[in-house]
Length: 432
Image (cartoon, rainbow, N blue to C red; front, top):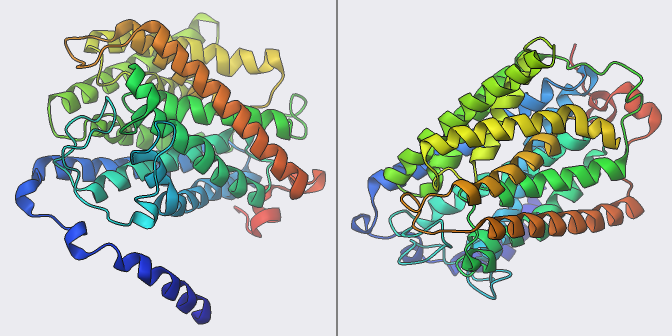
């Protein structure tokens, strides 16, 4: 182990030497302490959404024999994508190059410096008041949760090695280009006028569609539709949902990259959309002669959070309520009806809530965008165009990656292994 560490150190030292102290540090007078503090806190909140928010949210909905494996997926994905983002992802997403993909200037974070008069697409104007390192970590947290969301679509049946390969390649070849198109300094969708405040297309549609493709290619769980597959512990799910809800304020309000009026508006619209969506889901359950469920309340809240994400800093508080209500109602039918009609096994509704919610939210951004709030206007068609482009690129790219993995190491655990549970088979551990 020491030998390999020495080899890695020798290889990396010339790269690290290229980033001098002067490039990493800038005089405090060039920064805004309030903006910097808020974005640092927001980055922590977004990481909190995955660690432990999403991990607990997903773990509570699977069967007992797969709880540890499900949590392990979110935690391992966080580590893997963090390394990819540090090495290549950040540079390819947020440096200028062709409009379709960024450059290599920040590979291994070489030359990381303060943003100064640098335009990061239409939703990141005036980002020169925070250190670049803070922005990099903030965006790393976004990339991490995008990869973790996907795992919910095929929970309880995918090989751990195949999962890491898929999410790693997806993050680099699917997530990073779309992030550059929508948020990059010369991104072509941003130049066209597409609006995505905090990740409706980049994160939720992108991850939801990838999860849908994976769930179809891997196939249904053993016994799906014939056996009871009730959640193991909804208390964990509700705790995870609450963590996601709180962390989402960093997700949306933090995307202002400043402690300003836009951040305050995003904070308010996020809360209003979420409370409206959570109530809508349980009211729909009651209207359809079901009991208002804890899982329904949790699902409705997440649907509202997803729906408002692309619009949070561009719409009024009143519009946010409509977005939350509409998104929740549509996601209810996607999660409880659509997947059964079409016959796919989206285990934890990664597509039904994140994919569908992102689609609805991105389109409604074009309906409700307010020029009194947003400095940039858009059209309904531009928003629909961005949705279709994201769906097509994510679906085709994910299919190719999954096909290659399936032909090499395989995607799915064996029948007997799936029956035993992934905790024991893949990790040699179990919940007693």
